[in-house]
Image (tube, rainbow, N blue to C red):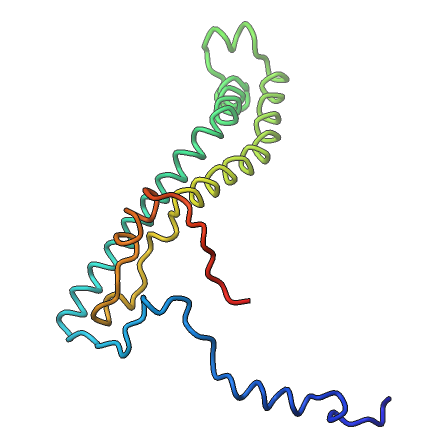
Length: 179
């Protein structure tokens, strides 16, 4: 078998067939305007400013949603670690009544350890909640590509496909993918 050439395996014919197909066709021909007409410099600058502003706004909306979800889900950990550090004599040693009557140094240490132990599964749960919301509301489809600013006639998908980021219409049942 070591003496056989690559011709026996059809590698030469495979490369010829691969050269015949230059690239895959686009997913949706309605989105493509052939040929695309570039914008003027001033118009391109204005559209670039609009696209960048839109993308920054979407980024901060995603960041705010992420912050709210993590704050709500991690609230038990925050409370437990806060009371553990507040009542420990080596850290803050508060003079509050609950610190004097219920929590000594060993129970404060136990609260701190418990808080950090339950933090890992709660972070995973918070990330799963955020990812499911991002998928459900199509939050990543809200970002606009730079080609919207450079070329004329490129459609704003979020407006034409059922509202802001397609969250109004719901799930798209047609999958467009090349296999």
